[in-house]
Length: 235
Image 1 (cartoon, rainbow, N blue to C red):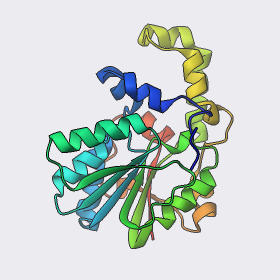
Image 2: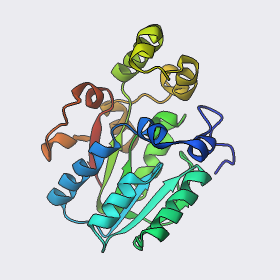
Image 3: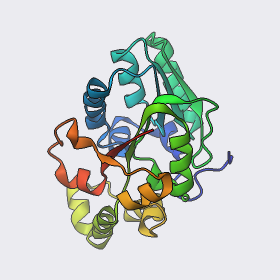
Image 4: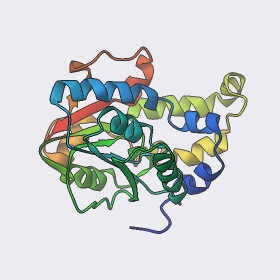
C-alpha cells in the first residue's frame, strides 16, 4: 500500500481532520440512503456473518450494519488515518464491539480474509486503476457472498462537467462551491480514468452486475442514482 494515496485527488486525511458536520454530509451525500437500501438487500439475501465497508469514511454504513446486526462482524476500511482514529473512538465510546476499522488503500486491497458482503460506495471514483480495484474487492468476497458497488458513469461525468461549466449558478445554489477544488477532487472522473459501466465491470470480473432495485425501491433522487448506479454481484 502506498503512503501517499491522495496525490491524485484531495487529501482525505486532512479533510477528515477538519471536517464539520456539513462537510461530512457533503462528502457522502447519498450514504444515508445506502444504509436502508443495504438493509433491504440483507433482508432478501440473509444476514451476513461478516461485512467489509471499503472506503468507509465516517463509517455510517459500518456502524449502522453493526448496530442492526450485533452478531455480524463488520470491518470498515479507509486510507485516511484521521477518520479511522475517529471511528475507533466512536465505536469505543458507544460500546459497538462488533465493528473495527483498518487502513487499506485501493487498488491494492488485500485484507487477508474474505467477507460474506463487501460494499464499496462513493470510493472507486478516487481510484486510478478501477479494474484492479474491482478484482481485489471481488477476491475479498466469500464463495456464495456478494459485492455491492456504487460507481460514476459517463453520464455522471457529463453532469460534473456541467457543474464546472456553470459554476456561477452552482454558487447560487451552494455558496461554498469551489470549482477548482471540485475539479481536483474529481480529476480522475473528468479524465475518464475512474468512470465505469456495467460492461466494464463484467469485463473485469467475468460476472454481469445486477440492478439493486430488484430488492428495493429506488430513492427519489433518481438523477443521482442514474449517474452513480448501485449494483451487486454474486460470487
